[in-house]
Length: 455
Image (tube, rainbow, N blue to C red; front, side, top):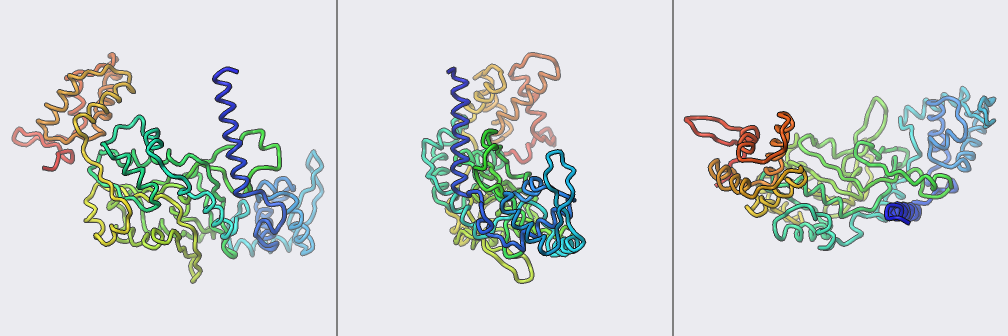
């Protein structure tokens, strides 16, 4: 067996192992009791699907509701006794029966839609959701120095930074990262997801009493397809759950207080999960803290109880409140002074405060050399010495980890435009410098706006 085939087989084995593990976490329901839902609740859901899709076969209903035909058969028999469903003459080539609503069934479906507009896979009960989230907690593994070194093998960080980040992940507490813009805070925090490779199950929706809250969001949850061979058997996990990568949700200046609470859409009569609920079992990064459309104090105050109790309280309105697990790595990131965002009493509640600083000359050179390799250009030590000791020094511009990447990419862009070979020279870097920094000329002096080092 060649190396490529061996790796393919190993990947397939890992995928099947993941499916087996997830099947143990949330096995397929075999009876109505296994679903945790009532016959009446499922009858309303089936009625809404039939109202939406017209006459449907058992296979079509099973796919829509994400429950096996053996369970739906009992629900349909219940609906037939209630004179809400009838069996229609089949027009399908395979002879399968089709089910449709009666007049009474259509009236019942409309009543159900008035109470709640959710039409999708059957939800999982709140208690079952809580159990599964706890079973696949993001805190179930200890991060080691070896794991951190592997995850950041191609990233140059200050001495001790990896140890502080790794230790903070093992604490289970919130992390506050701060430092000047351009020091790599966002890039590094996103990389932390590599420390949590295991796939997880995300429910399409959860049910609390008679209300349904939509959780799975294709915009933030990355679905993982199961190997084709597993689709041929009645095995694997409960299909009401989606097999996905651990969530990594990042929000910045667009964050509002409303995004942290359940949203109700009056037009569709549906409830939608807040960001932190979608981030359960993963990472939730609030970037550019202090620049949101909501006061920092309001955001911090929202997290006091969840951070301490590891559970969150959500409201459906009209006095209806329920509790969900708060199982995530919560990271605040800012380029502002932390003491301007929260007082010391609150900051003490956050386990780790990690400062990102300007790059040292050695680190700057290392990033420059690494970027040259990625761009396929020759590394010239004299050029980078000139950039650090002349260009940065004369303009009083602090060394930031983002500068080598940005300046070198501009040089490459210009080379492509001119149809010239990629070459990093003093002249090309000077051209890139003038294109990159904001220069305000006054009395013959260049002032580089936000990039001037405080001193």
